[in-house]
Image (cartoon, rainbow, N blue to C red; front, side, top):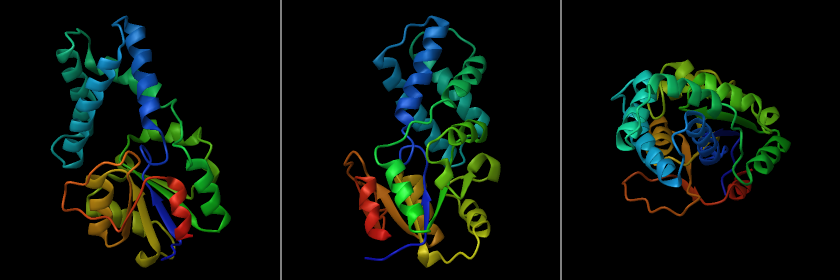
Length: 228
């Protein structure tokens, strides 16, 4: 089995449990405004948010549009009257409090670190939100650096994003890099286009109906031990 020296981890859905952070933040906000939170609301928001993020990753909308469109659509769908800009601002603050980890994330980061290998986070998240979450995380001492799309000016899977990453990792050799992520369209496409090996973290056993092929596929983070 091929061994790697540098591990590029996607953040949400790979190391961090974004689902819990999102649910807590959404419930807090709906309770604050007295809208009446429900599981139906959460599922509808997730559907809308995923669609909007895909548009953002394709450069079809801007970051600012992303943040307001998702709540505008949610409120319209749920017959709620609220200023989406104000709601989004408060929601982002709540979301930044969520540093929950995926099962096995802490252990695998410790393991990689113990082999004197490097871990970097590559994420399309918003800078201020991600910065706070990462600073409060239990894995922060094992991370060499964070590459957050909003700060860079490009996002995965854009080649300019990975160009930036490569120029900011010392003594880099592409053959020794493995990118791990849960998104086929952002992580795997980006890694494949950048000429580095990719590992699809398919925790829920989804079917890959695309022609995008990762180098590896895992369903548990502990499976990464074979690459050390």
